[in-house]
Length: 147
Image (cartoon, rainbow, N blue to C red; front, side, top):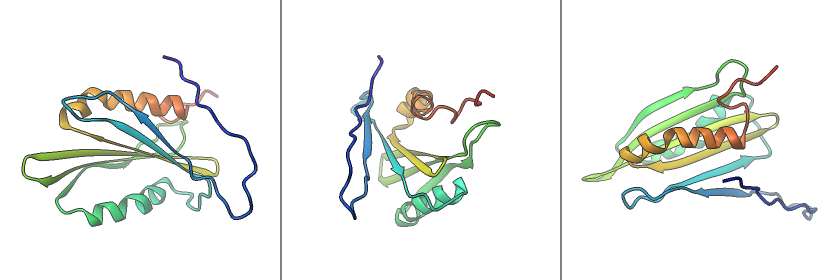
């Protein structure tokens, strides 16, 4: 399904800043809703994708007890924009396992932060779809840029 995202064009009054957050609702699997969130940092201060990711995830990881980090690495392939992925498992209560994936991308003077929550089963089913969605929204993140 082709989707065009509507954008607004207007001048913000002095002192106001666009902090739009995008939500993309995914399929429901075993009563688990899936919502991919995209936050755009338009005033990027970091030049290193690892630093950009760490500033946004460190407070979360330090604030949650019982977090097991499953993936924490730069994922840039040659010729692509710098990107970073963090995946962790958290068990907030007995019998409840939450998987959360973050994808961070630096592009020009902007930083992009995606996140989505999964179950173990839905991570296996939707993980590649999420990567493809990120690639559609930010071409050159997972596929090498054409020269």
